Image (cartoon, rainbow, N blue to C red):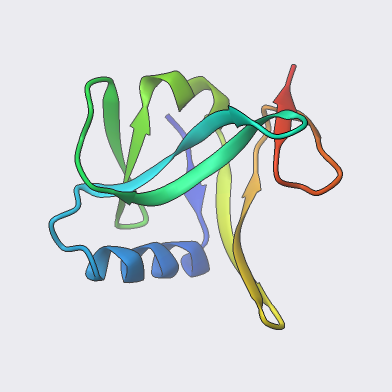
Length: 108
């Protein structure tokens, strides 16, 4: 499994984990939604579920369910601030298209 993370993304995720010390990590994956098919999920994982894998990236434990593994393989996670806006940004080699708003993506 090959997922990479920029220093900005890992710092942001570690800040979330510092506020939830009992959490096993950050849940990263996808869910079916949006106009293109899939949207990313990034949240503190309150617990591990059956089918979860834990992958440590830049010192951050990422909790990824097996249903998402193939869809996020090779993704680079970044965190960007622009003015008052701040968000995670994903560079996913599996994505073949994105919706106009950038909230969801398709795979080939």
